[in-house]
Image (cartoon, rainbow, N blue to C red; front, side, top):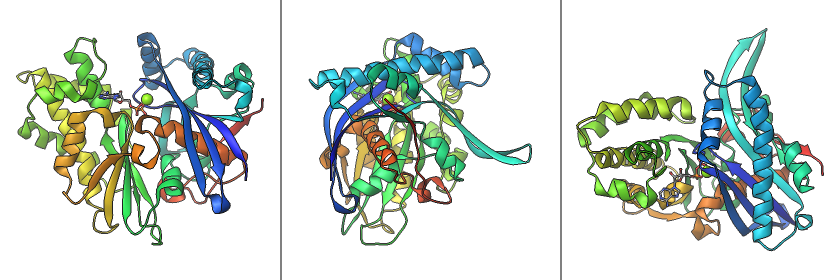
Length: 387
Ligand SMILES: Nc1ncnc2c1ncn2[C@@H]1O[C@H](COP(=O)(O)OP(=O)(O)O)[C@@H](O)[C@H]1O
Ligand SMILES: [Mg+2]
């Protein structure tokens, strides 16, 4: 079958910027995909843009005019990122078959509310695809999550669909962990075993580390580069034990979370709770919290899913202290690596996945994973703005 050149666009909860992955998707029989990254590029958000989006994520400060305006403004930024990655690859927009954009989530409420006799769940990703299609001249797919919700799902997580399609192996199971603002894992049973793929958020990813680093450096750094600050500090075991006593970690999977539980409010309370600790010690402790909660969830599946390998993606992979924390908390029999080893660079993975989800959409194929989202059936997610 044919080959398509697709740009996947993604901006997650970290609000670090918009990622663009230019990929070549080729397909063999039975949806055997080869997804090859041609070029990856990030358009970092300015400080004012980050604050603008943060204000939209807070129902108390979000104004309707700002939401409407930012939807179009982000469309411009997503379009610019798409053009940038194509130019950097030495290609032209006419060489691109499709753009697929996740958008920027500003609201996500998977628990249903009973309103006017209907059970309503909702989610809102902004960055209008009409603007992207108009600026680039390329057909653009976006707004994936609403369709899964309409089918009774949580609209998240969406990445496990691609994990299942691309990374199942034999005879061992694998875990794919993405450490973005929030951390999530996909537990893949061995390929031959007819067991469901499990996927859920484990809790904080880089979100608390980023907030602590910003405060420790008076805004000079927005993240703990390579985990250097954490490496200088000492983990406060007593405090760590208290932090691990959070209700979320006890909830059974599948479960999902976001800024509501582990955002700036929570970070602020923790930062101010331990005045006696050095900033580096606080960062070290919160980094260990992140590593420990991811590792603990992974460990539950090592025996039952015959897990031998864990592959990390997302910006958290570049935090060496976090990586070391994961290794220290996992059984020595487990091999820890990044998705680079599977041909998918860790920082580009989510953008690459959205390229694939958009490709499936225009081919009219279901692209959600009901066992991960809770949808009652497979559905075709995504809306299309034609070129
Ligand atoms: N070199 C690095 N050292 C430490 N942390 C990093 C590094 N590069 C990226 N990160 C972390 O990764 C985060 C971005 O990860 P990303 O996968 O883009 O998350 P999201 O999907 O939430 O946007 C940054 O906020 C930062 O915390
Ligand atoms: Mg990001």
